[in-house]
Image 1 (cartoon, helix red, strand yellow):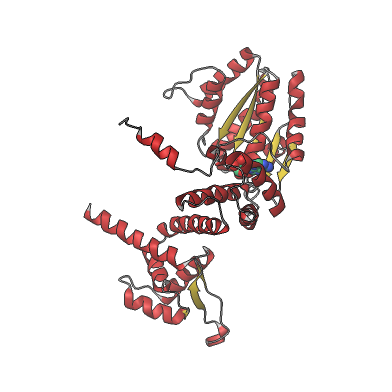
Image 2: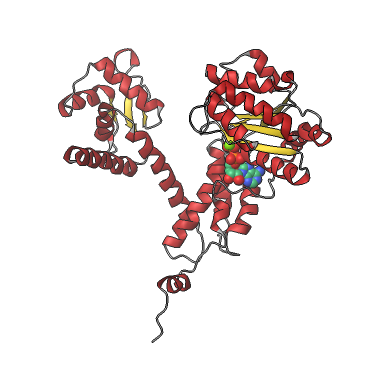
Length: 388
Ligand SMILES: Nc1ncnc2c1ncn2[C@@H]1O[C@H](COP(=O)(O)OP(=O)(O)O)[C@@H](O)[C@H]1O
Ligand SMILES: [Mg+2]
């Protein structure tokens, strides 16, 4: 008998619903970005002078997570790069590179000068960069994504000064695109730097459910085999992203997860129940991250509620004292309860009863199952650490 390769056998058996799963991954950059024509055109127009060798406008891109900021900027740069050999796009994520030294090094390396990891002072790197800029004849377009990460630091502000002052040295110029979350922009920094960075503002609004539907429809054609999404799958994934900040990342992740669930269950199609499961899985993952970081006292309070009952804060405090090895004052206890409430883990509205109507009725707000599973995991981990 001819021996068949184990994986070729598995491949035959798996009746994959995905045509190309990788287009659903966060790194994938699509060729079309529905509902972002205005933003894409504004960015392109602000960069347009580069084509004639003139200085472009500095662009500030602002918007909530998942609204397409990074993708649209990368898209424009890809187009510009293939159109003109004058430009040198340099993309920097400030979560990864968050010091003046690391960012200047990264830029200088992109310009072709091998900055060694050790030894050379930041000002020296800056000089090297200016030297390379003079020599190269190319115009770098620097994208500082997640720029909020460096705005609140003196070191980060110094870097922005460096970049804004380049033309003063007669070394040429650069294009600057900063990308940030609306939430934190402008709280910390120097007004002059800000206005220089924002010669052109491009705002990204959260997506509406219909816009998310279009984005998912477009993407699903490349991602799934024809006809394997039940009719309401895309609207539900779109609605879920819309509810969570108008976020395309969440919608796409939900669609991807739903396909995975359907495959796991050997279904011929992705059904609504698979989307519901995917949403549950994703949210319980999020909950488990939050729970991991709670204090032991807060974990105890959650575990007291994990049977699903409603109880007054007074009764809950009594039970806490009976169970916990670390007794706390009632005031501290109430602080814990407020914190859990602000994190969205519990509900604790005032009932209007009790002294001055201040009694709170406390109950769990997240799926019971996820909390008890997570608390068990936390306990198991602690045991593991103790025994290690
Ligand atoms: N208009 C759009 N069309 C297609 N996909 C989009 C669109 N907007 C966002 N996406 C997708 O949503 C995800 C998040 O987009 P991203 O550009 O990273 O958002 P942001 O940088 O604003 O957080 C990515 O997977 C991206 O491909
Ligand atoms: Mg981004």
